[in-house]
Image (tube, rainbow, N blue to C red; front, side, top):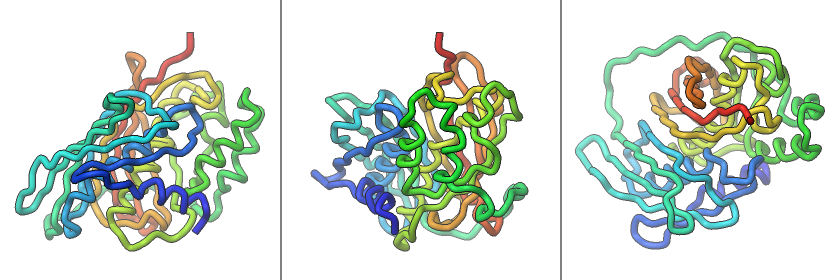
Length: 290
């Protein structure tokens, strides 16, 4: 296991303060606020720790309310909304400096058999043939006004092996492309056999690139380039089938719309053998600096 992954796992191991109350810390991010995927993953950890182990997370719906302060702890308060025969529902509020910064509702279900079908996995190259972040990012160093940006981006993704199928938005600045993006990802090391951990890790990664397709449609390079400003607004995920986040997952993303200073991204995450594991939808603020 890489040191970066070990550090991320420590970040997800929340400190219990009282019944249904947990405390988490943050790690440095590319921008001077708490990374949205981190707070979403931590909130799901908090919810999952109040649910019987035989009930797996099947969906989450979340809103990002305020920018998080990476220098302060985050307190997660869990509300046990419902414990039914098949489904369990939890609501989590993340608080910093006395104000809510994030709200999540999550649902968990006992396993049961049912009807079965799925969308086919799209074609994509073997992830082992694609460059790693450490190999790819230095190629675009001249796109960033901040000379330390490449190192910060590599550090921010060190726990996860994330590989772009095509050039990222900052690789084709000024060139409008089809609003579609694919990345392969897996953790940089093996994880324990805990289904909740794998779901939380996928939640963490899901916020890294989902709005890329919005940027591609307009030839924008992104937050690190500085030709747009923005932040995640809301995030929803549905977990369809079991998967492991330490094995290759294809994140197939697209943007159907951008308007009113907001951009929408939607995606499907497939296992390497073609099973549809997760559906993701996110809307974010995407503004052109004045």
